[in-house]
Structures are given as structure tokens and as C-alpha cells.
Length: 327
Image (cartoon, rainbow, N blue to C red; front, side, top):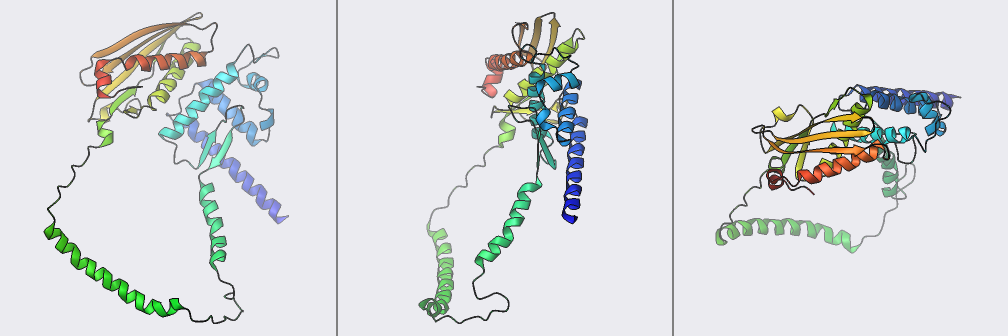
């Protein structure tokens, strides 16, 4: 019975650690998710900890989290799939920006809604478990406690070892004398010029939260989702450093740009205004507006398409493309 009690205690500790990690994520300002997305994450984590992970289907989540009735159809209403993709990206951004040292990592694997929990201690535990085995592998037979050691016959290696060690030290001494002479005979070499810091040479860009006009919850959710897409795509560009909002005043070296804009949802029409501002003098170096029909597309697809188009058009700006070319 003792092992069962210990296993139950370990399971309770793991559940408490996962719930503490969930609270840490929900309280972080770097976890960019709307209120319904936070309810979605909390629901699937609690259901998994209660061993109901196999029951996490779109129908059950839509009723428990989004208030859908029994007539819910996942094919015609992709709200669960869209929210899962958004929370998946928000978790990736959180662990990339500020959660990389957290003790537990919560992810949502693609193809399902049940979360996966992993601990940073797994690797260290595996290394500690391998240590006794490696020690036993190198232990020679006959050296165990209580067994007598048998003397082995003398080999050529035993005879050459006393001669080889002094010879090795003698060769090292000769090389120590030759190296100073070589420095006098050979011309002095010009030390290489230290390369400039890579991070300082990169262009910095701040993606500010988009202003959701009209006061609709759908417009606010779209604004947050589009910001996540823009940050995710810009971070894949090696020549750019993407800064969190509010950090631009701390950066004083290199070129600085700010991406701003606003969204407005009128019925099934989305209006988006975006502009790129030079942080040095506040000049607008690029601006554009977009309109999309939301009736025949999911919000997730529209966010991905607009983010890709904005980045492509930003690269046409001479000032930004001259400082850091974008793909």
C-alpha cells in the first residue's frame, strides 16, 4: 500500500504544479488572449487533470465554454477550432517571451484539444538515472566487494609507460622554446577587427496593440489575433528584433520603427488601417488600409492572410528595406 500512497501524493503534487503554472500564465501580461480564450484554456486543463481528456471534443467545449446549445455544428461554426489555434499561438509566444524558465510547459498539440504538460526536470532526471549504469559499465570484473583481485601479466604498455611520460614533458618543453623564436622570426599579424554586435545592427520594430473601433467583442478579438500573427511572422525575420509594447523607450541604439493601426467590424465587413512610424522623428513612412468579407472565411484565415500581406508591403518601404530587408 505504501507505493500506492506515494504515487497518489506525486499525482496531487503534479496537479498542483500544473494549476500553479496555469495561474501564472493567466496572470501574465505577455499572455495575449481574450477572456473567452482564457476560459477555454482553463477548461481544457481542468478537464485533463480530472482525467476527462478523451471527452474534449468540439461539441462539449462549445457548450461548456462558448454557451452553444445542442444544435451546435462544428462544420458550420468553427469557433472552437479558431480559439484553439489562437490559444496555441498565445502559449507559444508566452513561453518564447517570458516563460522559457517556467518549471512546467503547457502546449496544445495540433489535431486535438487536450493539452500536454511537460516539465523542465525531465532531462535532468534522465541524466541522473543514467549515471549508475555508466559507472557499472566501466567497473571491471573482479573488483567487486568481497572478490579477490587477480594480478594480470606485465605487458609492453607497462614497460613503455615510465619512458613515455618523461618524453611527453620533454616535447612540451621544446615546443615552449620554439614558440617564442617563431614569434620573433615571423612578421606580426594584425589582429582582426572585432565585428559589430549583431543585435545592435538589427532594426527594431514594436507592434503596438491595434485599436478596436466600434466597441464590438468580435472586433476586439480580431485586433488581438492579428497582433499575434504580425508578431509571429516578424520574429521569423533574422534581420529584425521584435520588441514588446512599451519597451521602445529603453532601446537607444539602432533604427526603431512602430507598427500601429485600428480595426472596425461593420456587419460582415472588416476595415483595417495600418501604418509604420519612424521612432526617430515620428514620421509615417508607410500606411495602407484593407477591407475583407468575413462571411465566407474564418477569422483565423483572414488574420493570417492580412498579416502576411502587411509584412510584404512593409518590405517595399525604402527606409525599412534599406535598413533590414524583409522576405
